[in-house]
Image (spheres, rainbow, N blue to C red):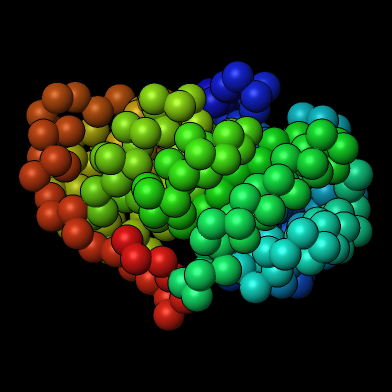
Length: 277
């Protein structure tokens, strides 16, 4: 499978399985099934309350642990150094693994907890965990560009990846340009815009032209972009297979121009604790 690699030796398959909001047996079945059919990138988080379910699937699969890219995240109210460490320890226990491949700050929060010295100490803690081997790489999610820039340029954090909402209805070009400039993996969550993208007449037109599903058009548009990975949630095997097959679709300039004409201001995830975008 195509993968994103960078100077921190990150090796992230471009298509992953998003696990939110799956839980319990549904989550375990979906992860195990995905691994069986060829997925090698699983995304979870403490806030999803499904790490134990993911861990059960990891324990049951015949796929070797070192062949699986596993991402988890620490929640925004646990960003003090001791709390970050405790969060990762609990995640590793639930996931039944000695390390994760990527450990992210899930949200920076909006109460100033990650400004100035708080941000610096949080990033230092993540870097220390990387040096200790409990995570192979570190990164951030839902950081606005000024905060990402401060993390990398002022605090020199060895950030390997950024995860944000990104799909055909939301422009992230400034963030994507910065990620490419600094050789970061750029993971798109909500890549199908929670099903909205597949209902668009323009996307359906492109899908009909190529004889594929609208969801595959939307995913291929993302996956064809340099440095971009996508983590659609899919619990059923048919949807999982369809998402994998999106890697083999080829869009043309006409298709990309039509997608470029769509509005790009549809942000679907902006909770009360979100930062200023």
